[in-house]
Length: 482
Image (cartoon, rainbow, N blue to C red; front, side, top):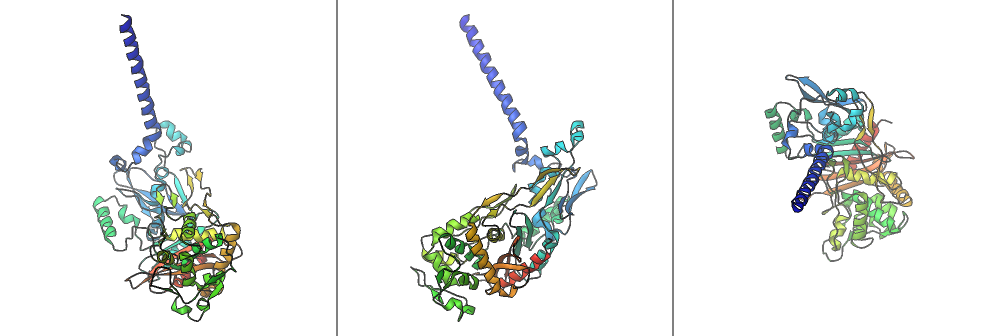
């Protein structure tokens, strides 16, 4: 009997342990994993009854960019203001999915975020649905409109523009061309929405894909900014003499790299000039030699990584840029070509805006963000953005040197036609596209004044040179509110 009693006790103890473990697991799943499970892409139930909620608005500069309106059947449909301009920011909220800020702040907008319970305690207490909150973005609506108009009017196949507040990482402009109207895919008519998706996905220039963050392009000579940063990190200064010349033949190859034809007879034709002038005049031979020899591929790749290359740049929850890249290689010819922003070197406009931002922010790259604050339906602030440093690729002295070099581009170099306007400094870039009748025309830079605040990057695909995008950058910076 004693043996039976002991066996029964052990069975009861084991059963009790299993019950407790089950209760702990259920509590953990319901309390801590419930929202993640609801949001899982494999969970089709998240798309049921998604339009029975009055979602809160998305705003910029006091303007409503997205909001909900009631329609028949106790449902709500999303509306968008100037969506062709602002869709890279808002994204869309359709019957099938959501993107952009609509996705990043989904549970604030639909009222299910736990933080909203404190702003609508009575509703929570009585079991009523907590009203959706408001998302205030960092976007300057006037500058965003100016950017889209500039891109659209440039004659470019595709284009993008980004402006950052360099000291905080706040994204002030995020423009993409061609674009789309979020209202077309957010309709409650499922067949109409699917037709819109099919048409947009079949379009050759992919208007649903944000060109500012979601696509990479060869950055041309704007990448020389990173090569210069690597050289400065190795001990160079603006006055350091660097080798130039009309042509440079990387070791192990029979194909020389030449300067632009417009450089013939200029400073780049000389045998050696200060780094300041080589950067301002954008001497290909100088920076190709740096990539192939000194500071070399490893130093440049390491510096690119410090700026954010090789990984997607986080923006908001569910919003990450495509990864920019510079090839790590032991072949001097490939490194030389990549160091002038050609070959396999690619970058997003957002990434190159971060490169410019570090120059005017004492060498620090701040994490970019689109959401300024989250508010409850009663207007109370739930959360406010806090600036966060992502990396520091430059020391203060190196940033000061690079700032002077970028100013020299506008004073005497390839960007001198911008002198006296809203652009205080920058770097032009023109990337040849094999077999194409167009170039990727780039400009990165910052606003004028003793203490620049905004970093800008503009890319357009069209015939011509990077200075064309520089002129667009000037228009955009000129439209920014103080």
